[in-house]
Image (cartoon, rainbow over all chains, first blue to last red; front, top):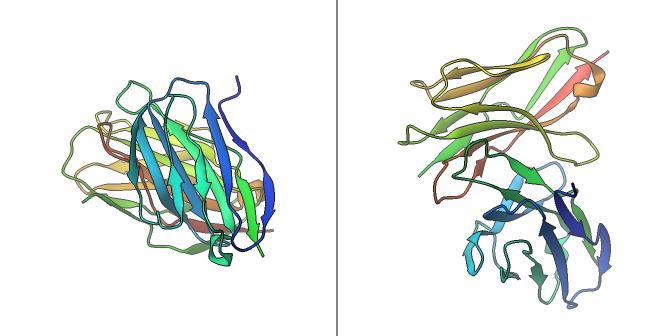
Length: 114
Length: 114
């Protein structure tokens, strides 16, 4: 059972470049999330989705875009990368509203912008 | 708006001793879920324990237990017989169990002293 899979695990970007962090889950979860975590800090919500076709901004959405065309996939797009976007990115999914719900996390994607 | 507060940014405990991490939350809901997640230096997010608000009995997982005080909106984590492997960042999370996002506290970094 794969759970939540994020790719790539590590990436170095130059300032101004763009890239997409991929996230897929195989648990048929309705909710999916993208967080960023700066060194020594907590999780900051970038975007989230309550189901296919629906996305909402979190607390730090600027510089990012998402889409949710299927239940399984929730890619995060970085446009015009900036050094301030150097962070660890976590994708998560949850079966909220269903009995026994739990939040499942991917292993994280380490992004450095130079 | 729902909030989750972890008032202890850092804590230290002697190996084999017991430590309690605090978490308070604010909500007007009666049905929700609460979680504690552990994040070791590897940055992996590991579910420690989960509590359903409608259950009065405190959840327990081996050396980890919670003190869930629904009226006081308090959800503390007790770690007994602390081990070096317990050193990590611990996050408290609130899941409203409806069409709204999960909320994380800012985390408590736990140091285990040998």
